[in-house]
Length: 471
Image 1 (cartoon, helix red, strand yellow):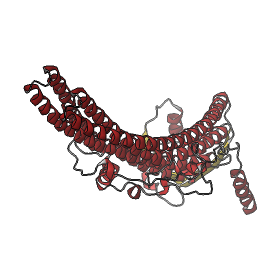
Image 2 (cartoon, one colour):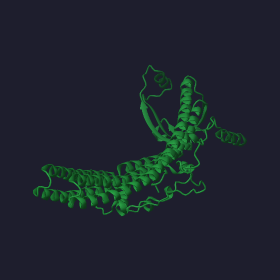
Image 3 (spheres, helix red, strand yellow):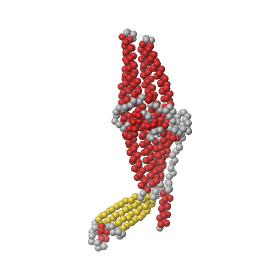
């Protein structure tokens, strides 16, 4: 008997190692040797994404905003709750290999009809009572052998789903860091543009006073005064517009940070924010392990493989072992009379689905199609990731060139406005030349601030595209 039991146990262990489906390995997508159009040294695997966000974004006000967003942002809180729920499911699925044990206690009484089989049997046996009693206390056990790896795949799927929620949390944080930093850069750009607009209003006030004096002296017509006034009003109109945009951006940042809309205390300007001239992107293959969305898609393939195994195993016979034992008696007084009231049942069953085999096969085929979709989605995610990094690097490179040109143009226009004012005061230039020079400087200063903001935003895009921000 012992030899038989040992042989059966060994057979179950060997069968449990069986696999009914072959997993699809994570594809190795074709990747470029370097990002962008500029050849980079592929031996340098360092990347700015490896830098913790607090070391990358060093502005104190920005750090406070990001810190608040990571703690209070509702998307982040939901991601944390999803992680907690997934962790509970992982702990639960580990019990799938443990036999199910149920305890039961029953007590019932019945009065059979005198004309029923039970009633006639009681009469023939000379039993005068008209009631049949039954008292039972038992424990039942059931266990399904994991012959085809179904439970193993369920465990693997649950663990992969948990890791997916962890990657989802990282992705939320990465997006928060990028969104807050870009919003902050937009805010300080608006601060700079508001200061530029106010400065130009004062400059136009000075020009308008001079033209009015010339008008009083009969040197210019009323048209000159009107055009100067219109130029001043155009600059003044920008002030409330920028003030409105600043308030809206402050509110958006506060909400993103999980706080009520309100003012944000700050002192930095665009010129105070600096990053290294050469931001290392590392090698493209590194984003496969660094970007949360790519890792999540890779885990999705693990889940898809497990689902194929589970649906395939459903079509095979299931071996179930059951056992039940306890005490049973027809009289309450004898209920726990040991060993007379003891009973026990042990059984085994092999269940093979027949009528629902077609449905199970369809589920298996659908699982395989979904796995193929997951492979395609993984390749697409990697392709998008490489494209985002390349785009961000091109933006940074070209915006630096634009900024240099814009700075040179502004210097030229500032000289022009200085010369036009001097010539105008000496009667060697008309008022239109002065107004045009002032308008050109205003637009150039506003444009330069916008280019600086775009460059800083591109740096944030690069940091996010490389998978930085969740450390």
